Length: 437
Image (cartoon, rainbow, N blue to C red; front, side, top):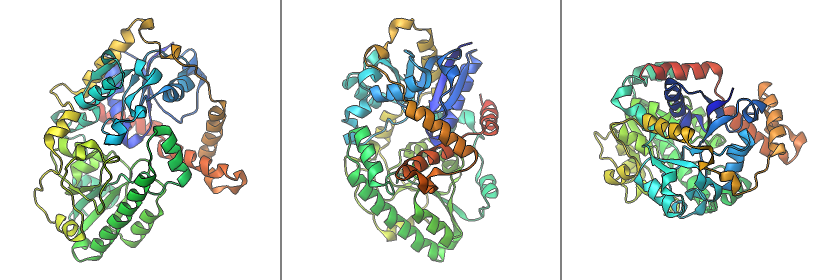
C-alpha cells in the first residue's frame, strides 16, 4: 500500500513540532503520512510498496539536494514539496544561486512564509506557479488557538530544577560555526557557495565576549537572582566553552529539550545575537535584546535585522536585566513582509498546498528529467553501521582505529544522536497537539 506523504526533517527543535501538526492535519483529511529524519537508515519499503506519492522535504536547493533528499530516500518521485526552513537569509545568501532553488529543485513546489521569499526565488528562475505563500507554520503555536499548549514558567522551572522565584533569562544562540573545524567550514563553503570563514571568526569572537559578559554578570550580586538558560543552535553541539560555564555557575543551564518557542513564552528576559527566532519572539508578543559586541558583516546578517537596535557594551548588557517593557529591536513592517500571518492558520494553508500537489497529474512535475541521479551506496552502508553503533552507544568519534574517518563518523553519529525522536516522544507530540486542533 503506497503512502500519500513522506515528510523529512533535519532538526528536531526547528521542525518536529510543526511537521507533526501538518501530519495530523493531513491525516484528519483522510490521507496517510509518515515522518522520517534525513539520516535515518534507508528502507526498501519507501522505494517499493510504501513509496510516497509526495515527498515533503525540509529544503530543496539544487540537483544535489534533489538527489540526496529525494532519490536516496525514495527513488524517483516527481511530486516534491519544499518546506523551505531557511527563508530569512543574509543579503549575500539572498544573492547566492544555492539558496534560490535552482536546477531540478525549481520543479518542486516551494512553500513561502511571505512575499519576500516568494519574490526572491521567482526572481532567480522558479516559476511562480511552483510557489505558494502559506505563512510560517511554526508560528501557529503562538496563536490564540494554541493557548495553553506551552508549559508556563512555574511548570517549566519545576521540570528542570530551576528556581521559579528568580527571573528566567533566555539566550538564543546562533553560533553554529564558532567551533567548527576548518575542514567543516570548507565543506559548508562548497555546499552553499558562500564563504563562511570570516563568519566563523566573528561567531567565535562574539560568542567568547558574550559569555565573558554572562560570566561577569553571574558573578555579581544581581546575577545570583536569575536562572540563565542558554539555547544552543541545533548545529552547536560541540562547544567546550559552554560546558565550562555550566560547571562554574549553578544557575547557567544548557537545556536542549523543547522548542525555542516553549522557552520564549516562559522567559522573563530574552537575549539573542542574530537568530531568526526573533520572529517567534515577535509573534509571541514579547521583546528581546540583540547583543552584538562586534559588528556583524552585512553578508552574514539576516535581512530582518537591518538597522536593528543592539547592545555592544557590558554596561548596557547588565542594565538590560532590569529593563521593563523594552522596545522591540527590529522594524515590524520588515518583519511582516517576511512572515505572512493571516487569520487562517499556516498549517491549514500548507496542507491545502500538499493536497493540491497530490492531486496533480503525474506529468506536471518532472525534476528527474533534468539531471542524472545516483544512489549513494557509501551513505547507505555508513548509516547502517552508524545506527548500529548508536544502538549500543559506541561513539566512533572516540575510536582512533578509524584514523581520519573517526572525526567524520563522530560528527554524523552526533547528528543521529541529536535528531532521534523515540516512539514514545512521537506519541507525546501528537497527543499534545491534537488537543488544540
